[in-house]
Length: 476
Image (cartoon, rainbow, N blue to C red; front, side):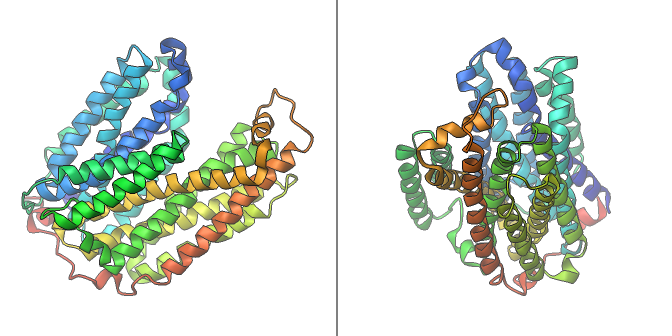
């Protein structure tokens, strides 16, 4: 690899690490923070607002990077994220912490999408799959070590240092970024701020609604705002998202697959733990083992696919990867309250493996389907649709489970509380409800397979691949 490629990879991996860790490290620090700040009634907002803002910021950051260049946007995102981290560490009330977490989310949304786009610029097609697969290890490592790191920092120093630690890491990444020679092909232009406000509001309303915050108001508002966004993009000369891009088969199918795969991913992480603890009667640590298996299998699938992507072909990789989650959820749907834990761990690992196998070819394919000037927006849309798919899936499947268990849904909380005495058949009722979720996820997986079968066979030849520019290839 050239010097610029090495620097770019280190910078992106560092930025992803701090953004990913903040989704897991904070969880173990928050009980201590609540003890100091109070505001337990707003506890969930510390996490929700981060997801809301980072999701809404993703397409805007992608468009910004196409207009003003990846380096500027990434640097700005790093500065915002680091400063917000310091402010979060200084918070004196829960409301302040929530506000600073929102600003953190703004930086994180830009870091992730712009970082992956930057790698697409720096590396030619032959290398792109490998580096995209490699970045998956960051998220897996964060999911595994994040809670332990958060607990260690909180116990040894203070919960505030779970935020302060981002400052030196972010400064190091920023210093390295300033030495990077960026491809200077950004054309300038304007941001469709009205379109950005509409899509951001639509995404936020959707996430709020499916998470139970005034769904009767939030969900219709989301649909209405999305319709206004589409109408706006059709009329404006410089849209935030050029809707013509969605008609390119590689991109349109990739984004639709992103929605379905996101639904499967987020639903697995949501419903596997209560199945382990409430149905199998296992401990939270064993529930973490099941999720850990999925987190470890993801980068294995992603990295392995990246190394052999050109030999396998994007379509074949997407099809094979789409079958794995179906097999995993089928296995989970057959488990009884007496099933051994290792069977569930195997099912979770198979789901994660398939997710990883699909993720790499989707990102590489959409980046290859467009030129430099659209790469930022299409890359950000892959991340955007996966998150939205996850939000929709978790909310819809939660409603399905509640419909199955009926008016006794509130009783299931006692099954998950080790100190409570639940009704004799409550565990069987919880098993019935979560089994319904797993069966629904099998249907989602089958829909993913049908979409994957329509994925273009010539995904890497849909546009003539751009060579890596001289300055990136030589490091000069």
